[in-house]
Amino acid sequence: MKNTPVPAHRPVSLSLLVLAGLLCMGSGSGNPGCSSNEPAHCTELCAVEGSYRLSFEDSSQLPPGCQERTLSLPTGPLVISRDDGDLTTRLHNMELTGSYFGGASSEVSMIGGGQVPSPTFALYASVVLEGKFDPQPASTSASSVLKGRYKLSTTKNGENDLPCDVDRAFTATR
Image 1 (cartoon, helix red, strand yellow):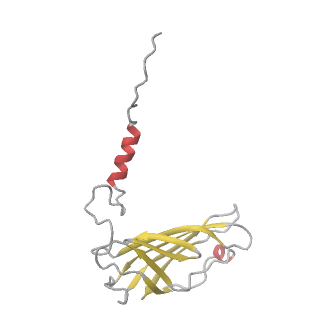
Image 2: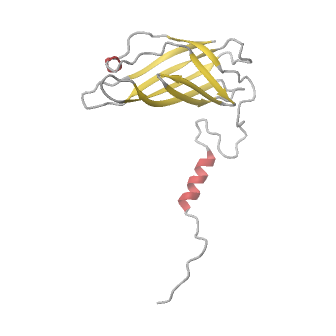
Image 3: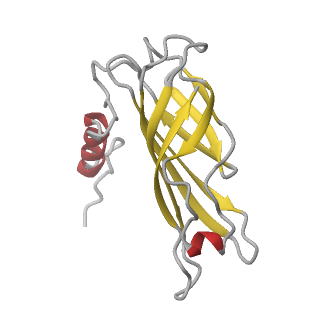
């Protein structure tokens, strides 16, 4: 049997090339991909940071699964921080992050997750804020309104555990 030397450079796996290609194409849901004409950061009408008064169209009690976990709708101000096009805020003691490009798009989507206080067991929850600014703020002192959907969902802690799933319309005013 003849010994054949192993090449110093092994060929790149086809699956890695396909993965890299898919990542560069973008997701079609906001990810601009590798060679997009979309701005990498916010360039106009970007002043969304600040404190917003948060209110809900339906402020009735949350479902029993949320009540037994002592979860409620957020009540304090919605404080949004912006670093270029990246947004952060905190709700239910969880950090939510998202992107905002301004200009022709007034849409924002922020998501976060983590453990929330529960009287009997550790609980994981996810929160999503999706909405549109109207008008898009030209400065941090300009009034603006963010209208959209607040979604809260928790994991179940057993077969008989009641779910806590909330989807409510909100308005945040600055």
